[in-house]
Image (tube, rainbow, N blue to C red):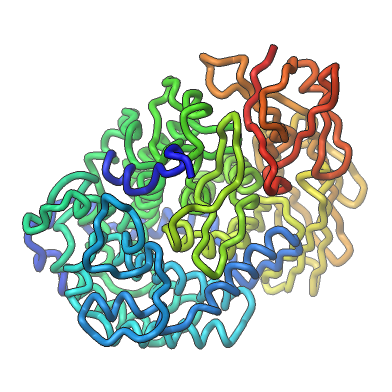
Length: 614
């Protein structure tokens, strides 16, 4: 492993007691958001698109389903004692069972200078419980539900303040535990989840900072090792607000307000780019906290902050939709993204980054109904996470997508890193990203072979989506209804799909690119919609200052040159690319043929994302 590949989360983390009410915590900030805003919240929620349940959508895509099955199998195969071992060890309980090693291991004498096993013990536990609960909601697997309930009860026996005292990441771990428990309640029906959450919160709060603390700021004076300043308390409000929304209690709403990083959000809301130099995944993740502040309390400031933050992120992203080379956000207009093509192989923290990106774009799409957020989600899905190497039983995890001129796919050198926690969640969430609804009908966001079932004004509706997209421009929908029902089907027309059209039962009409095209009618069994999304080849520069360094894009997918050296190629040659089979394109470069493939099809071949045009 080269030194450039050893750039890790530690480096970027380095660089860049509420018992019953708000008055119980010293240092709790006063906030205008703390006023009763239930009416504003109700209005925002009712105006927003709703997510379907995990079980409402069946995916018929082998690529998406394989990722779910592979990650779920890994989690189901991990023993209960192995999963509980760091919790027990950190509080002095007997800790039998396998030591998973890697980041998950508890090592009392861990030295951050080595950045080896023991960096973040137990940190992914809550995410794994969350993924198991979501997968139960998808599959109905009783084995998955039983594992969720069993793990929660074993964890409850190990709740102790020493866990947080001995933990470099108390806020990070608490946040993931909140996520796992509220998902256990909602998706796996764990009747004890909220009681365990209350005990977790009571135990954690005395060991957390009184408000959001940025990286590198010391808040534990007894801890002199700088690695104790790398926690991520500013990401907690999202799950705290969700806990409140799901009925866990008012204290979680108050805690969400308490941990909002409003210095950061004030700047973003005012249009000031406060992203540059910050740790990428966690700060994009924090934008979802801003969205939940809006959805919970109607805070327009936090909505502006999230929208502006997304625009700033897009302006410094790769053609794949990925961002944060070396896990660091860049300044808009800088050459940092271009420089990364030669300076690092750590292009995009893929499972964690895509998870953050999907949440943010899902919330923004629900609130604004702006199709560009769906475009962005789709781009990241097809060009990053769907091409990730599978999670392995020994903790090997795909961490970075490599956008270097000499790129390749490799596993992280560290076992069970943070991305092993988010990848199973991503694999479950494709379903809730694909369709949305409001009282008037449904919104189709992603084009994936799938079946959606729902009730519309008392009628049972089944809509089946059939397609070879993104390798084919045609998408077909067929409807079955228990009785005729009036509603709208809104189809996302990507901004690049100029000349798109749709036909309802054979009657064709144009569809405007960059919108959701509505089809309003009384639907009955046998009705069909055929959508055509023209996929012309186009070139996207890495940044405005380097207009000769381009990625080749067809429809939603980036085509990667399968080569370990930069070929001589012109714009005209690239734009004349020809599809040979669904996952292979050819570019005639005069003295031969350059093979191009999507990220999902690349295995161990050397490749380059960007080409220098001659």
